[in-house]
Image (cartoon, rainbow, N blue to C red):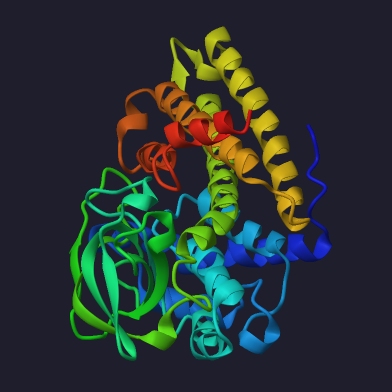
Length: 379
């Protein structure tokens, strides 16, 4: 097998700590969280105390200044354990970098330490009922009025939507413009006019709170514009999307690896016609095919992780990674359910949950059809 060379002894120790924490503090409660439609806030606070939230954040903002490999470890272990309700990755590795990279010093001091501690939970609101992957088509608008913006509109499919205390909202500050009219605003959910809609009932990821958000004349202080001037939102989004797509790829492969291992354990134990299922040639061939594909995808993913650490991961490569790994993830899940037989369709088996959870990976972060278009434009 091809060894992973990106992780040293310190990272291995960190991985063990994350794994043990998830086994003790998350796995026993995840079934209840699926019924509740969200994880507990206490989990976030415990994770913050141990440095599992925003590990790449500089010391002065409450983090430990680790490199992105530490974030990769957290998201891989969450995925490997099938704990799809935990929305740390979006909070730590999508929202936090926006504030760190584009926020004012005042914004950083106000929000980042509380994000690292788990005191506040965050989300990013891009998708709308009429605009998913087409970010230029957003209708939510924020019109400047003296020292504040008046925010109106709605968003949907927002991860961490019910728990969120702070949301980065993608809005048109100049509705007459396309991409040049988009800005990002830091909006606190406690402000008047901000309403959280229903917690959406999804096919999978049952413990992940995914919500509709509504804004009716929400007064957003002008100082909560992300970046030095209006109209920078689309550039900011495009700059950060490769990292988001890398994260999706990392979770896709970790999830596929876990599913393969669960299935191997199962087919060794399960008997049919008087012998273990693994003894049938079809089973062995299917397992071998999946192992080869997962191994190839793991090497590709780790190389993209290296490029990201070197700040060289470009938009087309990240799009290829997202499309390839999530397509593979769904194929692996389907094969593994088949090899489990009827039990693979039972919710108490982790493969059934993982199969349902995996399908959305080909949709969010930009649909895989959009990923192919991005790659094709780079020819």
